[in-house]
Amino acid sequence: MKRLAKFVFLGFAAAASAVPAAAETKAASFQSEYSLSLLGFTVARSSFSSTFQGDRFSVRGSMASAGLAKIFDSTKGTISASGRFSGPRPRPESFASDYVSGKKAQRTEISFARGNVARTVNVPPLKKRGSDWVPVATADLRAVADPISATLVRADNPKEICGRTVKMFDGEMRADLVLNYSSTEPVSIAGYEGKAVFCNARFVPVAGYRKGHRSIEYLRNRSKIAIAFAPVGTTGIYAPIYATVGTQIGTVTIRARKFEPGN
Image (cartoon, rainbow, N blue to C red; front, side):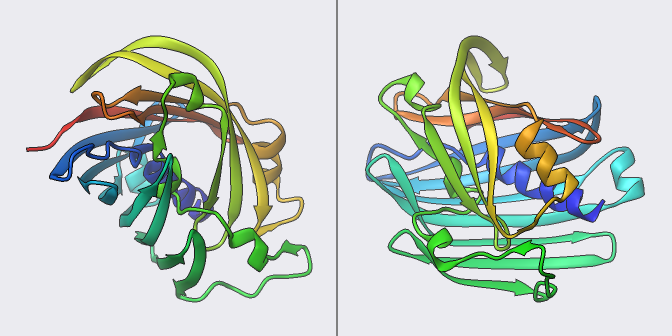
């Protein structure tokens, strides 16, 4: 359950973070809310507030378990990231996540330099791993992003959203998410009504995990993953509004409840 709690927390971040960068030099803001369900039951909710000025971005959010999940394994936390766009791709500068699950607390801070991970701090420190652990090498931390910045999308064509590989590092695990175009379909949520681009995704673990771990092997070999992106005005930015991830215990669904400009 602790591993699932961290997955849920970072899953919220990845789904909720790709929000619009302002085309002008003046600051702009965006508000989004998401719910996460497992087997049809809501288990967590989140809210995010983002600020943008020119190519710079800053995202802050909070998440808390809900429903039955709150009874069995209460989880709550905050998450933040900042950086700038360099052409079509985001270049993060800082990331922090701070969450409590039951009696366990964990804080992770990552700083970046020139698109690479420069420093990672985990409090408490990560446990010592055995010989079956795939260690994270220096080369694995080049040209990567945190779970928030990694999902920021700039594209001239909707189909360009899916034709890419998202490279993420959460402070312990390094993984790729390979996106391929699936379809374009109409959607309707508070703050947006129009078409969304659906991508199929393939999870590829790179480092920072235990060889043969059943949940990792399931995600890599059997999980069906889908992510839907919606355009934000005429900025050329696309944001996730829906995602499903097949896991060993059922399908996790992340769905936007609100997706609109801030005040």
